[in-house]
Image (tube, rainbow, N blue to C red; front, side, top):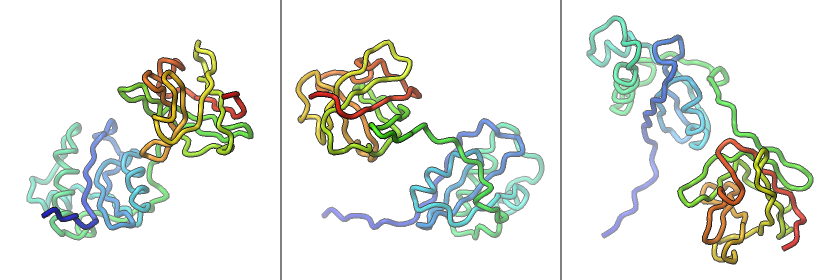
Length: 222
């Protein structure tokens, strides 16, 4: 019989670390839900922590204390492999129940490194929003989650710097609401605005690429 697993706090380990071996900090974050996130202080962990209710506590892992607790040889760490030498052992200790206070010192969450977010600006006519994803079907995901003019069904969509002319688009809920070849604006499964063409590629139609800025203005004829 199928049984739904209850929601529970988890430990998350992530290592994308161009600053490995430098003075950047090694972190253990406690999210408001109770999850533990382990990784470098380079902005990688914060979006996940905020999705889990924001950062409740921030801790800087102390390598010497970590090595002692993990039974590892003490001394100099590898300059290029902190995933092995710091983050994985720290995550293993924390998930096994070792208190974070045993291997880390508290830091102010306001001091953590934050990555700049994608460009997104509401305008009186609609929105200017950065392309954050293009999937294998050519659907174009935007940073924006809403528009100023949701009651107008006709829009004009263009991409800054593109050789393609702006295109008429229709605000829809499902792909099936679009006629074949028609461009539509919808809310994707992440809650962001996205662009799609029924039976085609919105990215090709608009000459869109990741990082480009899309202008959506209301009032275009249907």
